[in-house]
Image (cartoon, rainbow, N blue to C red; front, top):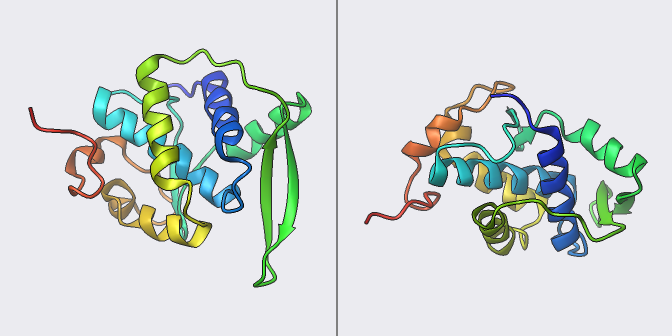
Length: 165
C-alpha cells in the first residue's frame, strides 16, 4: 500500500474543519479519528482510505505521517495550531481550519468519516485512547509496531461496522 499523502491531508483537514472547534479535539483525538476513519473504511470496503501506516503507542494508534502533513497544512495556511493549557497542567495541541477544505472524496468515504466524527469526537484524549486500545487491530499489534489493517475482520461487535445481510 502506497501512502496517499494528498488524500490524508484532505481527510485530516476535513476532520479539523468539522470538529476542531470542540474543546476535546486535540492531537490525540485527531490521531484516533484518523485511525478509525481508515480502519472502519477498510472493514467495510476492503481498502484503506489513505493507505496510512499506524503505529501502536501507549495511548493508542498514531498515524506515521501526521506531523509532516500538519506542518504542510500549516505552511499552506489551511490550518493553524494553538496550545491550550489543561486543568491538569498539560498542554493540548489544538488545530483549527482556516478555510473550508476542498473535498474530493466519494460519498461512502465521507459517510465513514462523518460517522466516526459523530460517534467519537465527543471523547477527550484519555477516553478515546483507552477506547482505541481495545480495538482488535490495536490490541494485537506490538508496542511501537505497525497495526495490521486485516485484523479489522476479527473485531468485536462493539467495534465492527459490518452488518450481516
